[in-house]
Length: 367
Length: 84
Ligand code: SF4
Image (tube, rainbow over all chains, first blue to last red; front, side, top):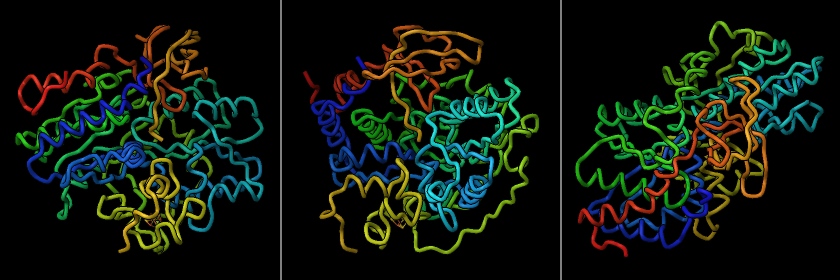
């Protein structure tokens, strides 16, 4: 067992597809919230194994895609300052700010370093006490424990040259915004397994009952995703609307208590702007007052500019599941991973990048 | 970015409660991972690792569900054909 290849087994995948076909009697529209699942779905052609009428709509679950442009501009401004280093996960580097991106800022001499873990950024700060290290703390609930651990570690070590630029988003308020929209057409959700591994399922139980929509916690390998789809359509066909765990090898219903305790000690829930979607109430984290000295915006007096310049990028529609990426007029022509107009074309979890990378060009419908 | 991958814990060095560091094997690659949030994990266990931090221990019993679910619902008579 390596908990990987076994779940990509083609015979197993096809048996699941068969079971789904045997189950559905009507069309159903499901949303996978997480961009990691979107990539797996497009990469393995899982959507094409589904019977006619069962549609997977791609959700906003790409932290890089929804990080507000103003935050990216702040990171760029800091990276240009002498004596400052911005540490970031790699997929933030190409995301367009209002005039440039972190990658170009680095090419022009800004100190931008890619780290694998927020803890690496803390270690860098400890090694180079004469520089200011700012970690670009983006992410969903999955990443919050690691980011909280980095802040806590820096506090415990008394580091005065480590701060974080926080752009944290929470999934349940986004689901609520989608289900509450008057034009919503989503009938069931595949909830993100790695988010739920941290948070547990309580919020999803509430949402399932409140909106009468099944919420199935789903993993990331092909058989896992089809298992999630099957569980979801079985509920829909039976008229049920429950939170269900189809990824129990990694998700406990009460989540990871230890991780949540640390997250709740370092962060508090706050209103958060989502790029393209606007401000969603109580949908993000900010540092608690007791950790305010680690807040880069506060320590360096950064202004927040929430304006987003007009662009032909239709990411807002893509992120809400209203538009398939390949239906965007700029897709693959004026917008490519090398020259992206919007974040969903850059990120490893962006839906546009998934379509660009894995869908043969001949299949792109002419709209 | 929410990519989390399973790896096997090879050894653990607990320096403090929040600095519980493990060597974790992913395929053939070894990496240092913080396992403070999975106190139940021991060498030999698989953990799910995201940006250098383990967020969950993989439950071996539950891991079989994906292979057994179809039989289970097949037996319940919900889908046409129970696989062998
Ligand atoms: S294809 Fe490019 S321009 Fe169109 S929505 Fe996606 S990121 Fe924006």
